[in-house]
Image: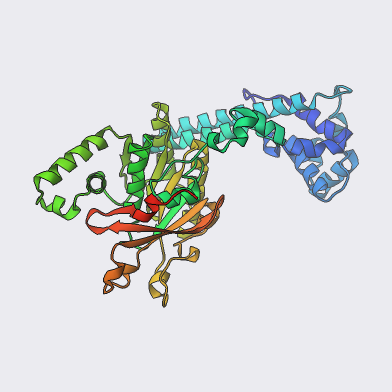
Length: 447
């Protein structure tokens, strides 16, 4: 079974032997080595029984390990007590434990790479799968193997500051600390400090509230004001429709007049200017229906490899995404996708603005129709995974006879892992499907 595969059985034996000589080392070893890292099945069984003995708070030695193996009828399968006794044969008086651990982990990773390669070869030769899906899956698997190799242990405050760009002075200077990506909405930026790399931001609303418009407003600002690339995955609208909405909002032109073709010269000129700006902006749109995490991962990595440093990724919207694996129900699938998006945002060090649906509970709620965290559809782990949860709410949708509510909008910051929660008052321009700051917020002095 192991013929031709990378193994070092001596290093495996010495690790197990070191534990039998001094069981206090088990905690140190178990923190970096798993039973799956051992190449020999009998080594895996011995290590697993050691784990169980340690979990009970008992001493680990030859007698207790042999007894535990006997309980499971496995003593013969590991070649008996004599093999346990032989585990420390040739072990130096001062074992190089870190070296043995490193060897065993490296060999384990190499075996997994070989296994993945063999599986991919078999799947490729069968010719039954789509090559794009196969490539995306291969990349995902290899990246996970790479993550297993990366270690970041506990660090002291001194080590954290020493690793901080600019050292202690930069760490203490607020003006030199890393700021997030500005959204273009003044009060929102004040409350959040902008969107930060590795954050999963959930933007939820009922249909027709304007969540896509709000996301596109932010995308335009990030691309044309912050000059950072924005990737938009639109699972509902086509690329043409998305660009049309973005263009009309940027040019402040009535989108209905644009679609009907009744434009005056001034409006045409504004559209041309905004179109030129849009063409030069680093905006990338994908409108693949039913996009999944593997496809998204592959496309984003390809964009990054071309030299782009992503400023923002927008997904419109979460419930339209699909999962490659088998899941028991839709709630579990959405939770899996949500977790995957969070991990992807951390890996790419980029904020992910993910749009989400709300349940009908807001419609049936008496009195105040403002959304709540419990209204997130098929929420599962969405609340848990999100660093920030915001809702778009326009009361005029529910009270259309109230002229005084027309154009008033709220961004409700319901959750923020690293800052305050609260409400941001905004203005919604219907004809342009565009959100704007209130005039008083633009003129307000900084607090």
